[in-house]
Length: 315
Image 1 (cartoon, helix red, strand yellow):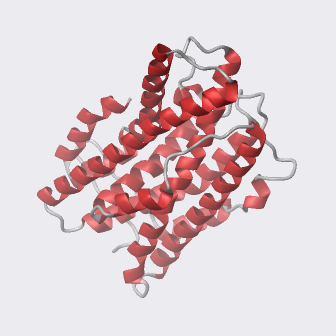
Image 2 (image 1 turned 90 degrees about the vertical axis):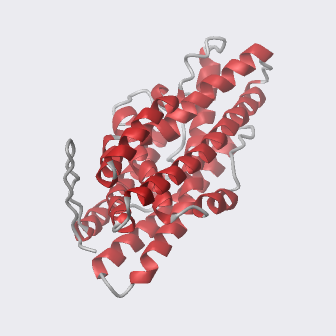
């Protein structure tokens, strides 16, 4: 495959990405776990961790301000843990993708191996964060999983479908930081730093995964592309069930942390609001990202329109 891709659409032009430049860019922003967590770099539990546009806790009017902050922090813990979870299926998928061509393109191999190494580092970072969070927060916050079982379900699908899910996640990460986190001045500085460093490396991953989608889709018919999108949506449905379960876990964590038992009506509203917040965070923000839609549109204009029609459910 060529180092550079360039594809035109009726309404979009695909960006040009290069393996060699991706390596250089990643090396410029490389960081070590010990540089950004531990020691005097501590979470401030008097502050919110997640932007309200993702957490959506203010709509739960039966909560007071302290309770909203606590729920915000529970959501933040789940957020980074879920990133760690999805990166546990991204890592083997990337390695499987590059393995057959180890002797074909040195820059391509180096770029994807760097991608994999950074994902492994992120998994380690998020486990370290979870340990520190739980020690200071004072009560248990359960998270969906285990990662190995989630990976088994996701990786059972055809490669292009999985690559589309990964591309969705990579652009989702970019959107969260740029649109909601970067300029939010009320968030805890340490949590914001973790998100910023994650975003810095994921910026290159989004480019590399675009190239991966291009390679996997080469020579596919319109019917093949449609079936891949079918499976992308099946994985999305599986993840939607997961984030609904996460909303219920977050309810349990909230009641443990606050000692407050919500009424049945309040519990129902809590799960509905937080499930939709999770849908937007993990599904809607990726599915509607212009760069993700541009890539899908380059494969099939009909499949792009299909996703645009489905996306409002997750917004």
